Amino acid sequence: MLKRNGEHTVVVPPPVQQKLTRGEQDAYNEAIEAIEGELGVLEHVKQSVAGLLEDPVIFTIPAGPEADGIIEITNTPTDRWRICSSLLKFQNSQVFLCDRKLQGLTKGFAVIERFNRGSPYSKATGEAEVLLTGDDPVLLVQEYAARAEHSLQFMASNLVSKAHRIVWARYASTSPARVVSVVSARCAEAASLNTTEQHAGHSRHVQPMRDHVSGNGITRSPV
Amino acid sequence: METLVKTETPLQVKPVERLAYSVHEVADMFGINYFSVYRLIQMGKLRVCRAMNRKLLVPRTEVLKLLKTE
Image (cartoon, each protein chain N blue to C red):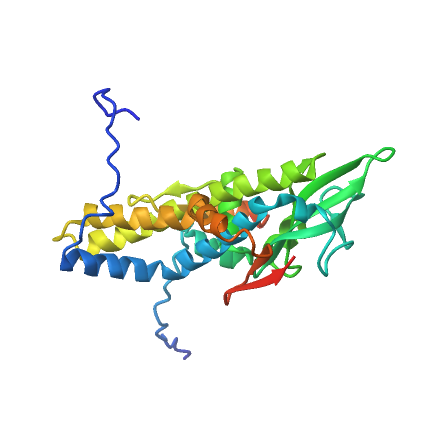
C-alpha cells in the first residue's frame, strides 16, 4: 500500500505483546464487551467453517435429517436440487451441499443457502439461493469454506470499526490507536482459520463434528 | 350566526426516515443471519458505504431494492 506521497507504508504488527496501561485496558474491555456477542458468533462460524476444511469429503456423503430433501429454486423454475448434506446452520438459514443428475450418469453439485420461509428476504428473492455450482463436490466445499473465511474477515473488520468508535469516543485521552490495534488483532484472530487449524492439528483423533450456529449458541453433532 | 371554533391540533412531527442502516439492522429487516448479509455485500448484491469510522452502512435504497418494495 502506498502513502499519499508515493512511499510504501511500513506495516507495523499490532502491539499484542505490549502491556496495556490501566486506562487502555479499560478501553479495551469496554470495546470488547460491546462486540462480544458478534465476536462469539464469529468464532462459532469459524469453527464450523474449519470443520468443512478439516474433512470436506465427509460432506459429500448424504447424511443428516435433511438428506435427500428437495430444494427448488423458485427464481428459475424447474431447477430442483437434492440435499446431500448440511454445511452450516444458522438461526434463520441453512447452507447445504446439493446435487442433481445431469445428462447420463454425471452429477452437478451446488452449495445452496435456504432461508426461513416467512422471512422478508425469502419472500422477495425466493426461499433458496444458489451460492456456488460445480462438478466436484470436494472442491465446492473447499471453495465455499474459503469464501466463508473471507466473509468472516470482512465481519471482523466491521467489528473493529465498531470498537474504534467506542474507544475514540470515550477514551480519546488514552492511546486509542494502541487499543484499537489490540482489538483489531483480537478480531483478526477470531476470524482466522489458521488458529483453529493449529488446535485441530492437536486433536486429529477426535471424531469430526458438525457445528450448528443458532441464536443462542452452537450445537455440535457427530457426522 | 355560525362561529368557527379553532381547535388546536398537536404538532405532528413526521418521523425522519433513516438514510442508512447497520448490517445488524439489515439482517433483522431481512429476517436472515448477519453472516448472510456480509455474504450479500461481498457478492455485490447489496451495496454499502462506510461511515467516517469505517463502519459499514447499507443505504435505505439498497434495502428497498433487494426487498423489491421500492
